[in-house]
Image (cartoon, rainbow, N blue to C red; front, top):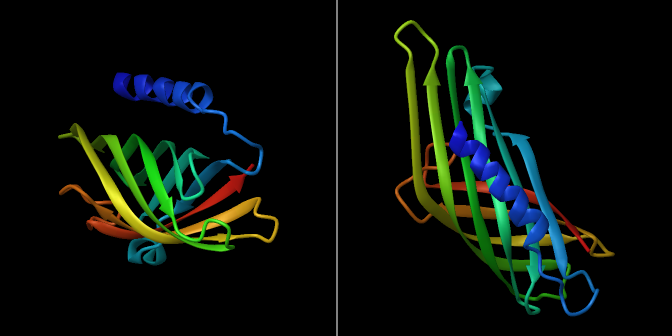
Length: 180
């Protein structure tokens, strides 16, 4: 829990102190958010729910290149089993067609991860694991007409042997962005 407090404090510093001001004011920054249940067979069968979250601040370096810090992960509670994965990292994105309303992209994100697993029975199991991981993701961004809001649709591939929320090394994901 101490590591989680330190990482949350560090994330606040990164998000509120680190942003670099862009050269002009034509939507060079964005805030991306995601919070949703992971829709798998366990969700639809009512067995358990996993919640996915992400928050990022991005800024454009050039027309095609953007980067920034990101906090993401997931958590699950089912009966007497709790587990969570908290990721603190950054991302770099290369965008094709940067002036279009449909923009294909390729994204790379390395991150430091804290995984916690706990079973609250008489025997009790409590496991903490930390590791470096990341993903490589092709995708597309869909922009509104005024370009203030966009939706990222992407397919993430793990760059290490660590799985995503679904237990696999690849997963479909999406994120809502506010551009300013």
